[in-house]
Image 1 (spheres, one colour):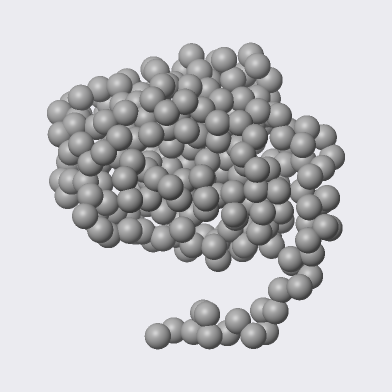
Image 2 (cartoon, one colour; image 1 turned 180 degrees about the vertical axis):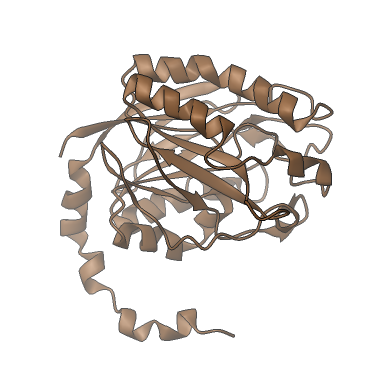
Length: 288
């Protein structure tokens, strides 16, 4: 298989949280546009942004103000990204706060745009935390999207979002559905789980014989200041080896060429899918 040129954009917040969600969205889009253009100029084939990329990570609060940050999919942000995708022949994964057509229902979602600008579908975050500083159940309904894998122009693409990464079942489900490359847009801060950042995705890449692109934001976000978003977005290969990593504290477009031939090579070598025993795993999914 051919090489796949991936791009990951990590970024700090570009407007005070006192401003309206609409103003913050415009500031974040304005800051992203030059890097999107740069990605297109550098021949990136699959580009992904961080979790809820047009907004702060507002989940340390329980403020209904942030419901106004949600927008429909398709909608204004995804439509703008469709124009960039078509312009550059580039697949774009667009993680935003989604407003469902049913009033008062919101999801943490990533839309997937193909290289011709067409909207392929979306993944809604499946696992929603509810712990101090991460009151996500206040803002997001859990998704139930059956682990979609998107057949883009360049690869079979899966999406897993932030807290999802702690649950190996979803990585496996995406791989079994055909994913060769999985992106994991995130918002994670220094402290308790930082050591897991370079442990879980490499382990999942090795266990499933796929490439993973992990994206984190950077900086501190006031007034909550739950910690430093430590960047270090990276690409990890199907062997579980990190091949390229971004800085800790800077806005950055990380570009890397992935050898997609490794997917089949590693899966043939380890044969984890052949040796699975799903018939004995029933207790793992039994209702309590």
